[in-house]
Length: 402
Ligand SMILES: *[C@@H]1O[C@H](CO)[C@@H](O)[C@H](O)[C@H]1NC(C)=O
Ligand SMILES: *[C@@H]1O[C@H](CO)[C@@H](O)[C@H](O)[C@H]1NC(C)=O
Ligand SMILES: *[C@@H]1O[C@H](CO)[C@@H](O)[C@H](O)[C@H]1NC(C)=O
Ligand SMILES: *[C@@H]1O[C@H](CO)[C@@H](O)[C@H](O)[C@H]1NC(C)=O
Ligand SMILES: *[C@@H]1O[C@H](CO)[C@@H](O)[C@H](O)[C@H]1NC(C)=O
Image 1 (tube, rainbow, N blue to C red):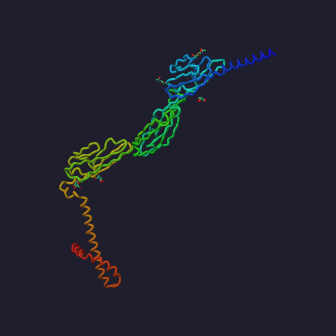
Image 2 (cartoon, protein in one colour):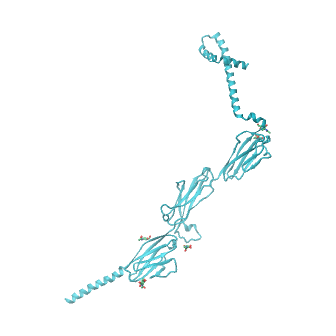
Image 3 (cartoon, rainbow, N blue to C red):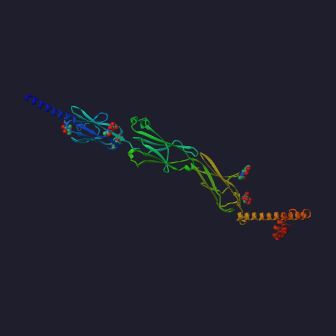
Protein backbone atom coordinates (compact mmCIF):
# COMPACT_ATOMS: atom_id res chain seq x y z
CA UNK A 1 0.00 0.00 0.00
CA UNK A 2 2.70 2.39 1.16
CA UNK A 3 4.96 1.33 -1.71
CA UNK A 4 2.21 2.01 -4.21
CA UNK A 5 1.55 5.38 -2.70
CA UNK A 6 5.23 6.28 -2.86
CA UNK A 7 5.49 5.00 -6.41
CA UNK A 8 2.46 7.06 -7.41
CA UNK A 9 3.95 10.09 -5.77
CA UNK A 10 7.24 9.77 -7.63
CA UNK A 11 5.65 9.03 -10.95
CA UNK A 12 3.42 12.09 -10.74
CA UNK A 13 6.46 14.12 -9.70
CA UNK A 14 8.41 12.87 -12.70
CA UNK A 15 5.55 13.83 -14.97
CA UNK A 16 5.73 17.32 -13.55
CA UNK A 17 9.50 17.43 -14.10
CA UNK A 18 9.06 16.09 -17.60
CA UNK A 19 6.48 18.77 -18.29
CA UNK A 20 8.82 21.45 -16.97
CA UNK A 21 11.64 20.10 -19.13
CA UNK A 22 9.44 20.02 -22.25
CA UNK A 23 8.30 23.54 -21.53
CA UNK A 24 11.81 24.88 -21.27
CA UNK A 25 12.41 23.51 -24.75
CA UNK A 26 9.04 24.16 -26.31
CA UNK A 27 8.37 27.53 -24.81
CA UNK A 28 11.62 29.02 -26.01
CA UNK A 29 10.43 30.95 -29.04
CA UNK A 30 11.25 33.69 -31.53
CA UNK A 31 8.93 36.28 -33.01
CA UNK A 32 9.82 38.31 -36.03
CA UNK A 33 8.24 41.18 -37.86
CA UNK A 34 8.44 41.97 -41.54
CA UNK A 35 10.36 45.08 -42.51
CA UNK A 36 10.07 47.44 -45.47
CA UNK A 37 12.90 49.83 -46.26
CA UNK A 38 13.65 52.34 -49.01
CA UNK A 39 16.51 51.43 -51.26
CA UNK A 40 19.67 52.94 -49.81
CA UNK A 41 18.07 53.25 -46.40
CA UNK A 42 18.74 51.44 -43.14
CA UNK A 43 16.64 48.45 -42.12
CA UNK A 44 16.28 47.29 -38.53
CA UNK A 45 15.45 43.62 -38.31
CA UNK A 46 14.28 42.51 -34.87
CA UNK A 47 13.66 39.09 -33.36
CA UNK A 48 11.89 38.82 -30.03
CA UNK A 49 12.97 35.94 -27.85
CA UNK A 50 10.84 34.12 -25.30
CA UNK A 51 12.31 32.10 -22.49
CA UNK A 52 15.81 32.37 -23.92
CA UNK A 53 17.98 29.77 -22.22
CA UNK A 54 21.41 30.66 -23.52
CA UNK A 55 21.19 28.57 -26.68
CA UNK A 56 23.16 29.56 -29.72
CA UNK A 57 21.36 32.13 -31.84
CA UNK A 58 22.15 32.09 -35.52
CA UNK A 59 21.04 34.79 -37.94
CA UNK A 60 21.10 34.04 -41.64
CA UNK A 61 20.46 36.05 -44.76
CA UNK A 62 18.03 34.96 -47.51
CA UNK A 63 20.81 32.91 -49.13
CA UNK A 64 21.15 31.05 -45.86
CA UNK A 65 24.61 32.51 -45.23
CA UNK A 66 25.24 33.02 -41.54
CA UNK A 67 25.49 36.69 -40.68
CA UNK A 68 25.93 36.32 -36.93
CA UNK A 69 26.75 33.28 -34.88
CA UNK A 70 25.50 33.89 -31.33
CA UNK A 71 26.35 37.59 -31.64
CA UNK A 72 29.62 37.22 -33.52
CA UNK A 73 29.93 38.40 -37.10
CA UNK A 74 30.28 35.51 -39.48
CA UNK A 75 29.83 37.09 -42.91
CA UNK A 76 32.14 39.87 -43.93
CA UNK A 77 29.54 42.44 -44.94
CA UNK A 78 29.96 45.61 -42.89
CA UNK A 79 26.51 46.81 -43.81
CA UNK A 80 25.16 44.36 -41.24
CA UNK A 81 25.59 45.26 -37.60
CA UNK A 82 24.47 43.53 -34.46
CA UNK A 83 22.60 46.29 -32.65
CA UNK A 84 21.18 44.41 -29.68
CA UNK A 85 21.52 40.94 -28.21
CA UNK A 86 19.62 40.53 -24.98
CA UNK A 87 17.68 37.51 -23.67
CA UNK A 88 14.59 39.33 -24.97
CA UNK A 89 15.63 40.89 -28.23
CA UNK A 90 18.08 40.33 -31.04
CA UNK A 91 18.29 43.25 -33.45
CA UNK A 92 20.49 43.68 -36.48
CA UNK A 93 20.69 46.65 -38.83
CA UNK A 94 21.42 46.79 -42.52
CA UNK A 95 22.62 50.05 -44.05
CA UNK A 96 22.41 50.97 -47.73
CA UNK A 97 19.79 48.33 -48.40
CA UNK A 98 19.45 47.19 -51.99
CA UNK A 99 16.87 45.05 -53.76
CA UNK A 100 19.41 42.23 -53.53
CA UNK A 101 19.04 42.20 -49.77
CA UNK A 102 15.36 41.36 -50.03
CA UNK A 103 14.02 38.13 -48.72
CA UNK A 104 13.64 36.05 -45.59
CA UNK A 105 16.07 36.59 -42.67
CA UNK A 106 16.27 33.59 -40.38
CA UNK A 107 16.71 33.57 -36.65
CA UNK A 108 17.52 30.07 -35.41
CA UNK A 109 17.81 28.80 -31.89
CA UNK A 110 20.04 25.76 -31.67
CA UNK A 111 18.44 23.62 -29.05
CA UNK A 112 17.41 19.99 -29.10
CA UNK A 113 14.43 21.06 -31.12
CA UNK A 114 15.84 23.56 -33.56
CA UNK A 115 13.52 26.43 -33.81
CA UNK A 116 13.56 29.28 -36.33
CA UNK A 117 11.58 32.33 -37.30
CA UNK A 118 11.64 34.42 -40.45
CA UNK A 119 11.50 38.18 -40.98
CA UNK A 120 10.79 39.18 -44.54
CA UNK A 121 12.67 42.25 -45.72
CA UNK A 122 11.16 44.24 -48.58
CA UNK A 123 13.08 47.01 -50.28
CA UNK A 124 10.99 49.59 -52.09
CA UNK A 125 12.45 51.69 -54.85
CA UNK A 126 10.77 55.05 -55.35
CA UNK A 127 10.88 56.46 -58.87
CA UNK A 128 13.21 59.17 -60.09
CA UNK A 129 11.74 62.12 -61.99
CA UNK A 130 10.49 60.43 -65.17
CA UNK A 131 11.76 61.24 -68.64
CA UNK A 132 9.54 62.42 -71.46
CA UNK A 133 10.40 62.10 -75.10
CA UNK A 134 8.70 62.44 -78.44
CA UNK A 135 9.36 59.59 -80.84
CA UNK A 136 9.34 61.92 -83.84
CA UNK A 137 9.34 65.69 -84.12
CA UNK A 138 5.77 66.97 -83.60
CA UNK A 139 4.53 68.62 -86.79
CA UNK A 140 1.34 70.59 -87.27
CA UNK A 141 -1.55 68.48 -88.49
CA UNK A 142 -0.06 65.21 -87.27
CA UNK A 143 -0.40 63.25 -84.07
CA UNK A 144 2.39 63.43 -81.60
CA UNK A 145 3.38 60.38 -79.62
CA UNK A 146 4.90 61.18 -76.26
CA UNK A 147 6.41 58.60 -73.97
CA UNK A 148 6.97 59.10 -70.29
CA UNK A 149 9.51 56.72 -68.83
CA UNK A 150 10.14 55.92 -65.21
CA UNK A 151 13.28 53.86 -65.37
CA UNK A 152 13.26 51.90 -62.11
CA UNK A 153 10.75 51.43 -59.37
CA UNK A 154 9.40 48.84 -56.99
CA UNK A 155 6.51 48.35 -56.69
CA UNK A 156 5.64 49.77 -60.12
CA UNK A 157 5.21 53.53 -60.31
CA UNK A 158 1.90 54.90 -61.55
CA UNK A 159 2.36 57.46 -64.33
CA UNK A 160 -0.24 60.05 -65.24
CA UNK A 161 -0.29 62.76 -67.88
CA UNK A 162 -1.63 66.26 -67.35
CA UNK A 163 -2.18 69.34 -69.43
CA UNK A 164 -3.12 72.42 -67.40
CA UNK A 165 -4.47 70.26 -64.57
CA UNK A 166 -6.55 68.12 -66.91
CA UNK A 167 -5.60 64.51 -67.07
CA UNK A 168 -4.88 62.98 -70.45
CA UNK A 169 -5.48 59.23 -70.51
CA UNK A 170 -2.33 57.37 -71.36
CA UNK A 171 -1.40 53.78 -72.16
CA UNK A 172 0.70 52.33 -69.39
CA UNK A 173 3.04 49.36 -69.58
CA UNK A 174 5.54 47.72 -67.27
CA UNK A 175 8.78 46.21 -68.38
CA UNK A 176 11.17 44.44 -66.00
CA UNK A 177 14.24 46.61 -65.76
CA UNK A 178 16.37 43.60 -66.63
CA UNK A 179 14.87 43.49 -70.11
CA UNK A 180 15.77 47.10 -70.70
CA UNK A 181 19.34 46.73 -69.53
CA UNK A 182 20.46 43.68 -71.39
CA UNK A 183 24.04 44.42 -70.43
CA UNK A 184 23.62 43.91 -66.70
CA UNK A 185 21.06 41.17 -66.49
CA UNK A 186 21.17 40.97 -62.71
CA UNK A 187 18.12 42.98 -61.89
CA UNK A 188 16.13 39.78 -62.18
CA UNK A 189 12.87 41.60 -62.71
CA UNK A 190 12.95 42.93 -59.17
CA UNK A 191 12.46 46.49 -60.30
CA UNK A 192 10.39 47.56 -63.24
CA UNK A 193 10.51 50.29 -65.78
CA UNK A 194 7.14 51.90 -66.40
CA UNK A 195 6.22 53.76 -69.52
CA UNK A 196 3.10 55.65 -70.41
CA UNK A 197 2.37 56.77 -73.94
CA UNK A 198 -0.08 59.38 -75.17
CA UNK A 199 -1.03 60.35 -78.70
CA UNK A 200 -2.48 63.79 -79.28
CA UNK A 201 -3.15 65.74 -82.48
CA UNK A 202 -1.25 69.04 -82.57
CA UNK A 203 -1.33 72.29 -84.48
CA UNK A 204 0.58 75.57 -84.20
CA UNK A 205 -1.51 76.72 -81.24
CA UNK A 206 -0.06 73.82 -79.27
CA UNK A 207 3.47 75.04 -79.82
CA UNK A 208 4.89 75.92 -76.42
CA UNK A 209 2.10 74.18 -74.50
CA UNK A 210 3.34 72.43 -71.39
CA UNK A 211 2.40 68.85 -70.60
CA UNK A 212 3.46 67.07 -67.48
CA UNK A 213 4.03 63.48 -66.56
CA UNK A 214 3.61 62.68 -62.89
CA UNK A 215 4.99 59.63 -61.15
CA UNK A 216 3.30 58.59 -57.93
CA UNK A 217 4.48 55.79 -55.69
CA UNK A 218 3.64 54.42 -52.24
CA UNK A 219 7.15 55.22 -51.03
CA UNK A 220 6.68 58.87 -51.95
CA UNK A 221 3.58 59.38 -49.86
CA UNK A 222 0.14 60.39 -51.00
CA UNK A 223 0.75 64.04 -51.81
CA UNK A 224 4.22 63.77 -53.24
CA UNK A 225 4.92 63.23 -56.92
CA UNK A 226 7.88 63.24 -59.22
CA UNK A 227 6.92 65.50 -62.10
CA UNK A 228 8.49 66.09 -65.49
CA UNK A 229 7.27 69.05 -67.51
CA UNK A 230 7.48 68.82 -71.24
CA UNK A 231 7.16 71.82 -73.55
CA UNK A 232 5.63 70.91 -76.88
CA UNK A 233 7.73 72.04 -79.81
CA UNK A 234 5.33 71.86 -82.74
CA UNK A 235 6.87 72.55 -86.12
CA UNK A 236 4.81 74.38 -88.72
CA UNK A 237 5.15 76.19 -92.03
CA UNK A 238 5.77 79.96 -91.91
CA UNK A 239 3.33 82.84 -92.32
CA UNK A 240 4.47 86.23 -93.58
CA UNK A 241 2.87 89.66 -93.23
CA UNK A 242 4.01 93.07 -94.42
CA UNK A 243 2.65 95.92 -92.36
CA UNK A 244 1.82 98.65 -94.95
CA UNK A 245 2.89 102.24 -94.14
CA UNK A 246 0.09 104.32 -92.62
CA UNK A 247 0.27 107.28 -95.00
CA UNK A 248 1.01 107.76 -98.67
CA UNK A 249 4.61 108.18 -99.64
CA UNK A 250 6.21 111.03 -101.49
CA UNK A 251 9.53 111.40 -103.12
CA UNK A 252 12.21 112.05 -100.51
CA UNK A 253 10.32 110.27 -97.74
CA UNK A 254 11.99 107.44 -95.84
CA UNK A 255 10.39 104.02 -96.03
CA UNK A 256 10.43 101.18 -93.52
CA UNK A 257 8.68 97.97 -94.47
CA UNK A 258 8.60 95.42 -91.70
CA UNK A 259 7.90 91.86 -92.61
CA UNK A 260 6.68 89.82 -89.66
CA UNK A 261 7.31 86.12 -89.88
CA UNK A 262 6.07 83.18 -87.87
CA UNK A 263 7.00 79.54 -88.29
CA UNK A 264 8.68 76.80 -86.36
CA UNK A 265 11.53 76.59 -86.83
CA UNK A 266 11.49 80.34 -87.41
CA UNK A 267 12.81 80.98 -90.93
CA UNK A 268 16.39 82.09 -90.54
CA UNK A 269 16.03 84.89 -93.08
CA UNK A 270 13.36 86.49 -95.22
CA UNK A 271 13.91 87.23 -98.88
CA UNK A 272 12.92 90.64 -100.19
CA UNK A 273 12.42 91.07 -103.93
CA UNK A 274 10.62 93.30 -106.40
CA UNK A 275 8.21 91.67 -108.82
CA UNK A 276 9.40 91.81 -112.44
CA UNK A 277 12.37 93.93 -111.45
CA UNK A 278 15.51 93.89 -109.42
CA UNK A 279 15.59 95.54 -106.04
CA UNK A 280 16.47 99.17 -106.60
CA UNK A 281 19.72 100.63 -105.34
CA UNK A 282 19.88 102.35 -101.98
CA UNK A 283 17.57 99.78 -100.45
CA UNK A 284 18.81 98.47 -97.16
CA UNK A 285 17.70 95.15 -95.75
CA UNK A 286 18.17 94.69 -92.05
CA UNK A 287 16.85 91.39 -90.76
CA UNK A 288 13.31 91.15 -92.02
CA UNK A 289 12.95 94.91 -92.54
CA UNK A 290 13.39 96.73 -95.83
CA UNK A 291 14.46 100.35 -95.54
CA UNK A 292 14.91 103.23 -97.96
CA UNK A 293 16.21 106.52 -96.58
CA UNK A 294 14.99 108.67 -99.50
CA UNK A 295 12.29 107.41 -101.81
CA UNK A 296 12.37 108.23 -105.46
CA UNK A 297 9.96 107.32 -108.25
CA UNK A 298 12.36 104.57 -109.23
CA UNK A 299 11.26 102.71 -106.11
CA UNK A 300 7.73 102.18 -107.47
CA UNK A 301 6.77 98.56 -107.76
CA UNK A 302 5.47 95.48 -105.98
CA UNK A 303 7.71 94.27 -103.19
CA UNK A 304 7.63 90.69 -102.06
CA UNK A 305 8.66 89.27 -98.71
CA UNK A 306 9.17 85.49 -98.68
CA UNK A 307 10.16 83.03 -96.02
CA UNK A 308 10.71 79.29 -95.99
CA UNK A 309 11.35 76.51 -93.59
CA UNK A 310 11.32 72.73 -93.87
CA UNK A 311 7.55 72.62 -93.92
CA UNK A 312 6.82 75.17 -96.63
CA UNK A 313 7.00 78.79 -97.65
CA UNK A 314 4.88 81.91 -97.48
CA UNK A 315 4.91 85.31 -99.18
CA UNK A 316 3.25 88.70 -98.80
CA UNK A 317 3.46 91.67 -101.15
CA UNK A 318 3.17 95.42 -100.94
CA UNK A 319 2.69 97.75 -103.89
CA UNK A 320 4.68 100.91 -103.42
CA UNK A 321 3.55 104.08 -105.18
CA UNK A 322 5.84 107.05 -104.81
CA UNK A 323 4.10 110.30 -105.50
CA UNK A 324 6.01 113.40 -106.47
CA UNK A 325 6.07 116.17 -103.86
CA UNK A 326 3.81 118.45 -105.98
CA UNK A 327 1.06 115.87 -106.18
CA UNK A 328 1.26 115.24 -102.51
CA UNK A 329 -0.76 118.32 -101.48
CA UNK A 330 -3.69 117.52 -103.76
CA UNK A 331 -3.77 113.83 -103.06
CA UNK A 332 -3.14 114.17 -99.37
CA UNK A 333 -6.81 113.60 -98.52
CA UNK A 334 -7.12 111.18 -101.40
CA UNK A 335 -9.60 108.93 -99.72
CA UNK A 336 -12.10 111.57 -98.38
CA UNK A 337 -12.01 113.44 -101.72
CA UNK A 338 -12.78 110.26 -103.58
CA UNK A 339 -15.80 109.68 -101.36
CA UNK A 340 -17.09 113.25 -101.79
CA UNK A 341 -16.53 112.98 -105.54
CA UNK A 342 -18.49 109.77 -105.62
CA UNK A 343 -21.40 111.26 -103.69
CA UNK A 344 -21.49 114.30 -106.02
CA UNK A 345 -21.49 112.08 -109.08
CA UNK A 346 -24.38 110.07 -107.69
CA UNK A 347 -26.36 113.26 -106.92
CA UNK A 348 -25.88 114.57 -110.43
CA UNK A 349 -26.88 111.17 -111.78
CA UNK A 350 -30.06 111.17 -109.65
CA UNK A 351 -31.03 114.67 -110.79
CA UNK A 352 -30.51 113.70 -114.42
CA UNK A 353 -32.69 110.63 -113.91
CA UNK A 354 -35.40 112.75 -112.27
CA UNK A 355 -35.27 115.20 -115.16
CA UNK A 356 -35.58 112.44 -117.72
CA UNK A 357 -38.57 110.93 -115.89
CA UNK A 358 -40.26 114.34 -115.51
CA UNK A 359 -39.76 115.17 -119.15
CA UNK A 360 -41.01 111.77 -120.18
CA UNK A 361 -44.03 112.04 -117.89
CA UNK A 362 -45.05 115.50 -119.01
CA UNK A 363 -44.79 114.34 -122.64
CA UNK A 364 -46.92 111.27 -121.88
CA UNK A 365 -49.42 113.35 -119.92
CA UNK A 366 -50.02 115.63 -122.86
CA UNK A 367 -50.63 112.58 -125.06
CA UNK A 368 -52.90 110.88 -122.53
CA UNK A 369 -55.04 113.96 -122.09
CA UNK A 370 -55.69 113.81 -125.79
CA UNK A 371 -56.47 110.09 -126.01
CA UNK A 372 -57.54 108.63 -122.65
CA UNK A 373 -58.78 111.48 -120.56
CA UNK A 374 -60.03 109.41 -117.67
CA UNK A 375 -57.64 106.49 -117.45
CA UNK A 376 -54.61 106.61 -115.07
CA UNK A 377 -55.36 110.16 -114.09
CA UNK A 378 -54.84 109.53 -110.39
CA UNK A 379 -51.56 107.84 -110.93
CA UNK A 380 -50.17 110.52 -113.14
CA UNK A 381 -51.63 113.16 -110.91
CA UNK A 382 -49.62 111.80 -108.01
CA UNK A 383 -46.45 111.81 -109.97
CA UNK A 384 -47.12 115.30 -111.16
CA UNK A 385 -47.78 116.44 -107.63
CA UNK A 386 -44.59 114.90 -106.43
CA UNK A 387 -42.63 116.80 -108.94
CA UNK A 388 -44.53 120.02 -108.43
CA UNK A 389 -42.92 120.43 -105.03
CA UNK A 390 -39.50 120.31 -106.58
CA UNK A 391 -40.43 122.53 -109.46
CA UNK A 392 -37.70 125.05 -108.79
CA UNK A 393 -35.00 122.50 -108.57
CA UNK A 394 -36.21 120.94 -111.76
CA UNK A 395 -36.01 124.24 -113.49
CA UNK A 396 -32.51 124.86 -112.24
CA UNK A 397 -31.39 121.43 -113.24
CA UNK A 398 -32.98 121.72 -116.59
CA UNK A 399 -30.93 124.77 -117.21
CA UNK A 400 -27.83 123.01 -115.96
CA UNK A 401 -28.55 120.07 -118.20
CA UNK A 402 -29.01 122.27 -121.25
C1 LIG B 1 5.79 38.55 -43.68
O1 LIG B 1 5.85 38.44 -45.10
C2 LIG B 1 5.66 37.11 -45.59
C3 LIG B 1 5.91 37.12 -47.06
O2 LIG B 1 5.54 38.31 -47.66
C4 LIG B 1 4.25 36.66 -45.23
O3 LIG B 1 4.03 35.36 -45.70
C5 LIG B 1 4.08 36.75 -43.73
O4 LIG B 1 2.77 36.42 -43.38
C6 LIG B 1 4.41 38.11 -43.19
N1 LIG B 1 4.40 38.08 -41.76
C7 LIG B 1 3.85 39.03 -41.01
C8 LIG B 1 3.94 38.87 -39.55
O5 LIG B 1 3.27 39.99 -41.52
C1 LIG C 1 25.17 32.98 -26.80
O1 LIG C 1 25.21 34.35 -26.46
C2 LIG C 1 24.49 34.72 -25.30
C3 LIG C 1 24.53 36.25 -25.18
O2 LIG C 1 25.82 36.72 -25.32
C4 LIG C 1 25.09 34.05 -24.09
O3 LIG C 1 24.36 34.37 -22.96
C5 LIG C 1 25.06 32.56 -24.35
O4 LIG C 1 25.71 31.89 -23.29
C6 LIG C 1 25.75 32.17 -25.62
N1 LIG C 1 25.53 30.77 -25.87
C7 LIG C 1 26.54 29.95 -26.12
C8 LIG C 1 26.17 28.52 -26.27
O5 LIG C 1 27.69 30.33 -26.17
C1 LIG D 1 25.12 51.63 -51.66
O1 LIG D 1 25.03 50.50 -52.48
C2 LIG D 1 25.19 50.73 -53.85
C3 LIG D 1 25.03 49.42 -54.58
O2 LIG D 1 23.97 48.72 -54.11
C4 LIG D 1 26.54 51.35 -54.11
O3 LIG D 1 26.69 51.66 -55.46
C5 LIG D 1 26.71 52.61 -53.29
O4 LIG D 1 27.99 53.13 -53.45
C6 LIG D 1 26.46 52.30 -51.81
N1 LIG D 1 26.48 53.53 -51.09
C7 LIG D 1 27.13 53.68 -49.92
C8 LIG D 1 27.02 55.01 -49.27
O5 LIG D 1 27.75 52.78 -49.46
C1 LIG E 1 5.06 90.83 -114.13
O1 LIG E 1 5.18 90.47 -115.48
C2 LIG E 1 4.16 89.58 -115.93
C3 LIG E 1 4.50 89.21 -117.37
O2 LIG E 1 5.46 90.02 -117.94
C4 LIG E 1 2.81 90.28 -115.84
O3 LIG E 1 1.82 89.40 -116.23
C5 LIG E 1 2.57 90.66 -114.39
O4 LIG E 1 1.39 91.40 -114.27
C6 LIG E 1 3.72 91.51 -113.91
N1 LIG E 1 3.51 91.78 -112.50
C7 LIG E 1 3.62 92.97 -111.97
C8 LIG E 1 3.31 93.07 -110.49
O5 LIG E 1 3.99 93.93 -112.59
C1 LIG F 1 5.05 105.83 -109.54
O1 LIG F 1 3.69 105.81 -109.15
C2 LIG F 1 3.02 107.05 -109.24
C3 LIG F 1 1.63 106.87 -108.73
O2 LIG F 1 0.94 105.96 -109.52
C4 LIG F 1 3.03 107.55 -110.63
O3 LIG F 1 2.45 108.81 -110.64
C5 LIG F 1 4.44 107.57 -111.11
O4 LIG F 1 4.47 107.92 -112.44
C6 LIG F 1 5.17 106.29 -110.94
N1 LIG F 1 6.55 106.36 -111.28
C7 LIG F 1 7.15 105.49 -112.04
C8 LIG F 1 8.60 105.73 -112.25
O5 LIG F 1 6.59 104.53 -112.52
